[in-house]
Length: 556
Image: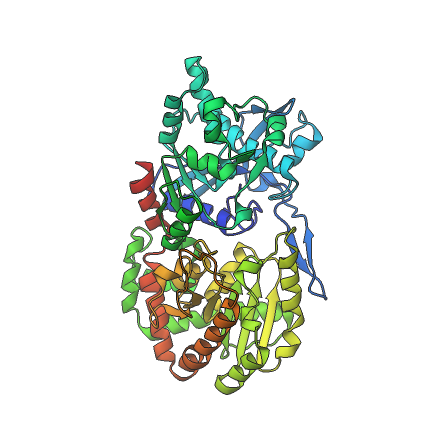
């Protein structure tokens, strides 16, 4: 549903779209033949405004499509209900290392379509079930038809990121059936499975779309969702579950971290689910000062991303000086925006991601008196927060309000700022400019998380609960620190009711006894950890390694 290719092109909402963009960028970096398909959103996700009471206001994003994308000639049609909907596409090319990867954005905003169908190119993740199903039909069915119209007649693999695009499997079945002039058979099912790869990205229920069959029959009356013996392939009870559709029609399935694959096998116990841990596209996320260090000490790092391990030999003084440039860049921006007077010598923590309950943005505020006492005893503390709440996530919006309301209660020991309209550009400032990256979701609900990887490549260590990628990336005291222990139990699943108190105390303990004393009393030791983040985690948790694993395990 989303691909992030440029901060000026609002075709993404968060991690899933950013990861898709990083994957395609990695393909361009290594010259791998790949094409991306998504929907065009003329009004974007939304522009976030935070008013004086801390209330999130969602405003449409105005942008000129033809300033960034090139309209393509082909038109294809799909049937929605009793209407024929025309689809066009726009091209964006990702260029890395003299290689290009095309990304096609599907668009229904054409005069020959009725107003409802034109609106399908309006908002990302907007509307009701009918609107969402229509969008996913444009993506899955229209996407395959557009690729054919563009000349992509022989595609080796179709890779579905989440179930949003899984209707493409039914379009592939239709192609086979029409070629043979015969009804769909089990052999056709196997042929489509051989073509398809599916990556599940979340154990959270809201990330798995399902639509009542009564609605599906209205919107897509021509597809065989309820064919006798094949019904269980297409349906899950009285619903079309997009995740199950992708699971049933893919030959390779994976989660996005080792722990996430364990959790996914619990959720979908009848399926073999492998693990390919996410990675980030280093050239897109590494800051200019760190890039300059790489260029000086590791000249061919862009061609050989794994050579970043040699960052372990970069002098600590140079690592620290590059970090201070990034930190000044961030704090100058913060102070211009909020006039809060953040200082470069003060320990600064970053927390920036979607504002939703399971990510526990408020965990560090569980005991304000203790947080202030830590700052008073060890040294000043600065907190930089950012993130959007989904327009329908009322609890997420309340979290933003509560965070906004407490900043005066923390002063002067702790300075807190919440930056509005978190996007790619702001993310790049924050992940490079803070001294510590905080991550404390409720285990095991964080499938992977990639913001800590982006921080690591810039020499910013993480303080995180042991969930998602951090179980693999945490070398205690070398690449960062853990919050508490790995309490995940396969039979219990989600943490118990006391996990918030336990994790908050563990967070405070680690800040008070380990992290902040190290920062304030031994900059060389802290710089050593920063350098290890780059050399150890940056050289592994990158999108080129991830893509290589997909090529070996899933594509061929």
